[in-house]
Amino acid sequence: MSLQVSRWCLSVARFLRRFPAIGFVYVSDSESGPMSTAETGSMVRGSSSGPPWIVVSHTLDDVLVARWPGRLWRVELLEAALSQPRDGAGYRRAIAVKVLEELSAATLFGTHGAEVCKVIQAASRLNEEDVDRLGQNASAISAAAYARAWTTWLTRNDPTSHFLRQEHGDTLQARVAGKTSPIGHGLSVVHNAVFERARTVGGDGVLVRDDDEVWLVPRWATAADALCQAALALGAPEIMPEADRRLLILPFVEVFGFDG
Image 1 (cartoon, rainbow, N blue to C red):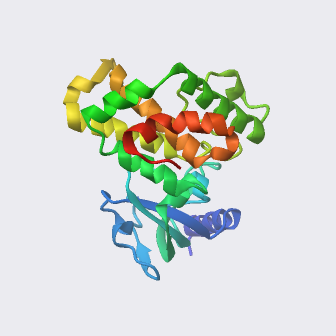
Image 2: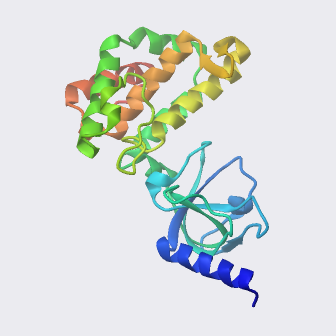
């Protein structure tokens, strides 16, 4: 065995000792990579020479939900890729995994993830009338309640966080204590669903561009805010008083008739 191969084997062995062998893989329905045909009990092998690797997240909080919907798997890492992210990245690149079980993708959004999924589903089906009705029920008071919930969550998880010095009326993520938000990546998924639906319904006419940045026009942005507020209230009711929870879900209830 050459010195170079010996060093590689030692490096991989040290890497595997640093992290648990069990992790999580999220695969969106639009993906075509090695995990797109995964089944419980199967062994899945990716490329040994380069991407696409199988991305195995250490914890559920580390799972990145880039596109929705998708499937969530608990896996055992069998063979690690040579190229790995820096320490603290929250995931490993794998060449081969054993698929242990499928979990409900709603698990990614916390204890009340099923309720968050209802908001995501509504966001992906918005029409112009829905957008107008959400806007009619939106208010600055609800934005303040949303910000208070974020402050409560941040204080509970890290009272020294620099995020506490910021405004949170439209916050989607603020990673503290290994967590992305009170409902994982749920708020980003809701916002992305509105963004994609807006482009489907209104094309470029619903977008505001400034150099490399793109925003939704105000009426669609207001709808996105209202649905994010509902998702937070339904997914993390424990971080707000009941009066604030009812306030945050009001536009969602008025338009879609769901009362959580």
